[in-house]
Structure formats: structure tokens, C-alpha cells
Length: 199
Image 1 (cartoon, rainbow, N blue to C red):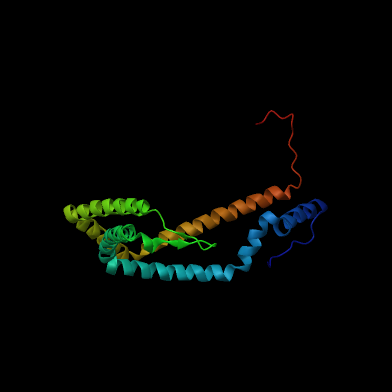
Image 2 (cartoon, rainbow, N blue to C red):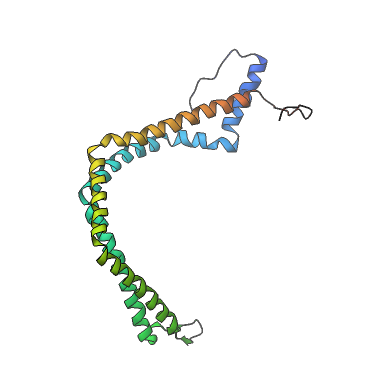
């Protein structure tokens, strides 16, 4: 890390500076500071790519939000029915689930487990299917809300600045905290007065 080292310090100032310098460069708890400095190029590249990816994600959601939401609904229902069918097939064909141990013993898994799994996933699939069938208008409305929200984000690109502003606000707080810690370290050894009435 490149920075100016003060010159012409008094003895007390030299001691305080040595405490700060050792704390920043030799204390393991502050190794993250040097790591951030060494990786600063990668951090800036990631920040730029994050803005690019955010814009791409916003436009992607604006174009396909409704289709993605409906696709996920049918994917969940289809996945539950598929799990029910697979578990039912394994229950009907227990020999297809047999395994061979290291000593060569053939073990057939308990078909009741697959029966319970088939009933469980079948019940979930039936419930989700009924919900989709009888509440399709509500699902359609929810998908429209998602689509409208995505279009709002696409039309209001400056909303990304909220995240950027929050990042710099957090960075400022960290810098202020760091200078406060450096100020405490510059005091050198801090001893607690056991006889003090202060808490």
C-alpha cells in the first residue's frame, strides 16, 4: 500500500505512528485492509459488471417476467406429478430398486417407502393442480403484477443508483470507523482505571 509517511515527528508522535503502522500491517485482524487494496482492481471490475448485469436482468425480467412466473408454476406442478410417477413405478417394480452390497449381497429396498413417497407427492401434486385450476385468475393477476413491476424497473433505470448509493454510504461509514480505530490505536496502551466510577 502506497501512502505518505509523516516525517519530523516528536517522540510521542513517533510512538503513536508506530502503533498505528504495526496495527495496520502486522495485526492479523487488519489483514483484510491490505487484501482489499491488493484486490481493488477486481473489486472495481466486479462493480462495473454488477451494473451491466443489473441492467441485463432488468430488461430480461421486463421481457419475460410473466412467462417465467407461469413457467415456474407449471414446473412445480409437473415436478410433483413426475416425482409421484417415479415413486409409484419403484413401488410397482421393487426389483428395479435392488442394490448390491460390497460383499455381494443383493438387497431389495422396502417398497412401502416408495408407496408413502408416491402418496405424499401425489397428494401435493393434486392440491397444487386444484389450486392452479380454481385460482388461475389470481395466478394470472399475480403474473401481471410481476410483469408491471418489471416494466417499472425497466422504465426507471435510475433505481439502480439506490444500490450504488447504499454501497458508497456503507463505504464512508467504514472509512470513518477505520479512522476512529486508528485514533484509538494512536493513543498507544489504554489502561482501565478499576477505581473509576464511570461505567
